[in-house]
Image 1: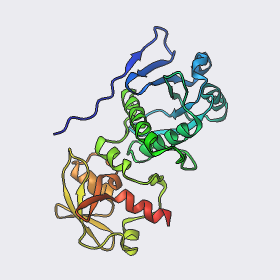
Image 2: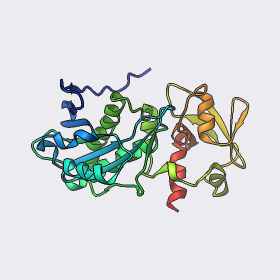
Image 3: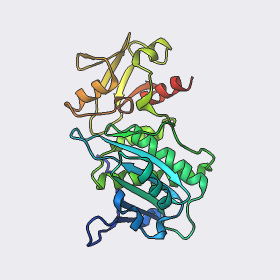
Length: 272
């Protein structure tokens, strides 16, 4: 089994309770702060620069958690405003550049969109953004390094107790158009109706830790291990022996010898 990517952080934990916990990712010149909403005002002015932020609600008993992903030219100032305008969040994760030059507007827009996509595709995160954010004006050569930063943000969230997507699911998202999948109305039956899926299509797991094969069946089912499931997530959960999973990122349909995530097919129909 291939070794998973490792994202080393230097974690600075203050003596005083409630003060911001800082994380430094030297590999990607990234600086993060995890702070309670009541202590936003006590952040130093070094956090009043361009970056992105995630407003975090408490983790529920089932492991899910609400979030809001945003960007700002002055992150601290924006968060102070959110303490008065938004009530549901308890903590925030601030993400800024650790280089002399801060992120520019297009970069934070692109990062905002990618982090949002990663959370949307996660089973546990429930972003509340009303619109799908993003900025696709960033040059292709810059997107590769920014994508690594976005993944690093999700690893920081896991470190702080906020579970996100598994590595295989993240890899599938990287190949998918940015789309807010949790709010999509598209079903398996819709994919069959528009001939994006056909009866008998072979499905394979995209998760290397849970290999499996299944069959797509009209009018809108997945057959796995002799059982019928009405949704991709239900079939993926069966593979994982009851564990929760985002089936749209878990399953891929074979096209020209290569697996295409169901999330991609769903996004195509959403775009139409």
